[in-house]
Image 1: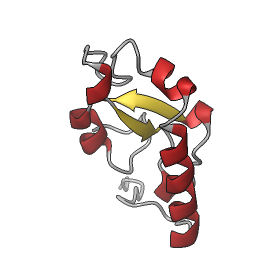
Image 2: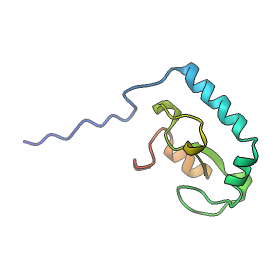
Image 3: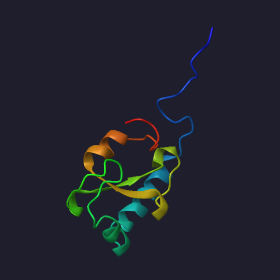
Image 4: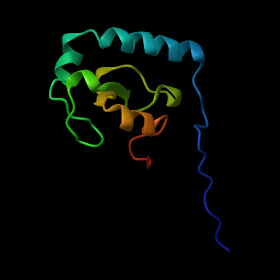
Length: 96
């Protein structure tokens, strides 16, 4: 008899709330930079590839903060609100 592997809905290891708040502050500052304005200027959602006005795009962490992701440029992408809300704390390869 073959058993399905255990795949938790939520991450097994959580980082502390203090670290999450720190990373959110960093992300908030990055949203004000010319780098972020350029990153979202084409208006394309990283996930669904649909076009939006740049103001409609949100900042998403590829590796979510709750799973240890950081607010660094390599981990931040523009996402439409629909994709960002659907992704929640999942990694990009997890279905959402």
